[in-house]
Length: 104
Image (cartoon, rainbow, N blue to C red):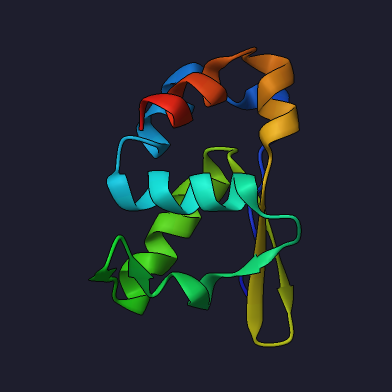
């Protein structure tokens, strides 16, 4: 089983955050995770903005969000559950995430 990469918040750059959120699907997924009160399974995002997203593409989107420091994921059985790292990102980049989400 592949190890999940979660960079320390100190290693997350502004460029990484902006790159990860530049894609509309990733932005929609991240925005939904920010609003979530509990971890969400990746499979619920097989349709984003009324557009079907293939599982392989969805996996890549989650990998980018995770490896660029925007989400934290954990395996539970066959499911991958994810949460937004908004509090950590807000501490490092005050107001950035709220501004991006408001503009979207």
